[in-house]
Length: 367
Ligand code: SF4
Ligand code: SF4
Image 1: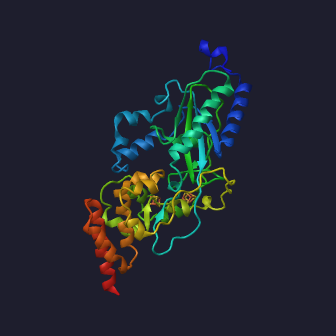
Image 2: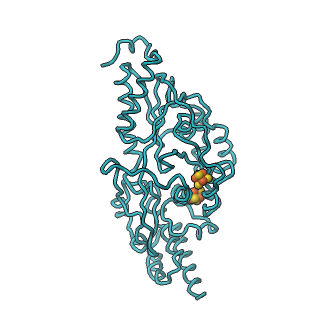
């Protein structure tokens, strides 16, 4: 039941003891919902805004022009710009599973986060349930705003300030126990809750594994990613051609790249997921390349429409597949590529297909 205090604008007055108990209750609810880490911080903490602005000014956001829009840049300064009157940011981390089998020679590879139902839907539902609990647990009327990659917010900065983990050299939030295979979410609340201590340690130490393993040298010394070089960006957000100099490095990736996570020592021996608690994969992590090349536009949504792979659209996915086929070194793919090229109407996919045919023809000549 809602407290009558709420109607007199005193919703933010909670004694320290009550506030602490409330935090514990909210955390317990979050864990029940499947989040594996939860922490609280003020919206006004240092979230690395200046670092973010210099990343954009340097052009490292590549073709994501919306990131440089002045209104969005301004909003990223503080969560208060998203929820006016915000007093607390509740940072949350929700894990996703990583398949352990290796792809075979005729298979592609899809990034682990994209194998299940779109996280925007699943994690938003959970975070929304939690936001409703904040009101019922506090007994006062609160305004909340749920963000799951859906609002201009520097979520990794808030997660670090809320004590969830540190920002690793690969630019991702690393939790000491759950590593980096995590979706981050935030519940913004106009209720002042007791804050957690920021995560101050640097768990990377002298490790450089992700930097050394990145196939395109996209990891910058300041722990940011140059999206212009990053295979995740190039295979997902990028709508145009993939630059020639990165195509070989793409290997068999047909959507996204997990390399800077898979080599991280903090991502080995992760806790087991309790059966039935987390979404199961909906698509094959290692799709057959020949079948993928032949997927028709009307079939693509049925296979990938509910997963993040849909973000690349049919066009981007087939562009990636064509390049991955070109990287197999298998001449027997040439006739299939030729057939798809004959009826290809998209110039970006057609160019990638021609490139693949040329590459396979060249590699055959060398033998
Ligand atoms: S996702 Fe891949 S390409 Fe991008 S920084 Fe990580 S390892 Fe490099
Ligand atoms: S691989 Fe090493 S340097 Fe990179 S994020 Fe993990 S611990 Fe940090």
